[in-house]
Image (tube, rainbow, N blue to C red; front, side, top):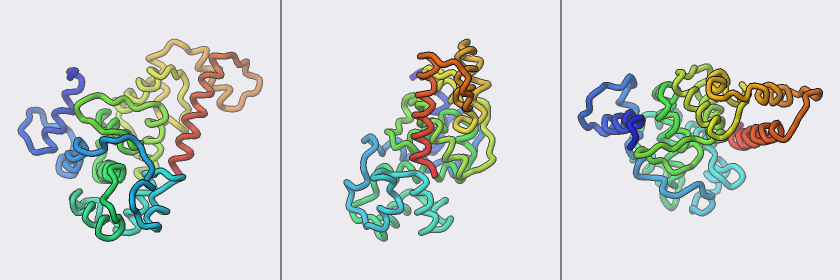
Length: 253
């Protein structure tokens, strides 16, 4: 494993109660719920309809046939108030399976609930890039693997930031998380990140790319300047931004 991922390994060891040097600057008690995330979600995003779920639960947890993280968040709050924020994972699964789910708790819900607990009980996803990354994977219903880096795509990162803004409005990100998001966007070839999709990220992306002319024109076009001269490179940038916007719009309400 690369040296840069030692923080993730140390974090997981400490959450599981094992000895490790270097006390991380986060509250470990509420974060221990993440230890089970390494053992679940072995499958990619799939339709909740494959499971035998009561119709009322489906309607609240599904969006266009797929799981939606804010739908799960609302459903848990509506049915269990704030009590579930601190429940053990086993208590949550037993409660869901006893009251709502007739064929076990889907992996997608397990991932989302544990990631949501982390967001609700700590500031870790706003402070540490490796925790933001795993929360993003859970929110986007991807396989969560603490043993390796799993860079978020621009759509996934933007959706995660939008969800976090809904749940913890006004919470600021530490620079390392914003740098992480900027790096993911840079790898994807993006040069302009609108504030409404990527709050606070552009200044860090500017340090990674020298395509400032393309950035400036893309910004003008995105903001509705009809006089801006477009070319193929600009169209590609706008197309990517539209994909991000549409994805976030479909997942976050």
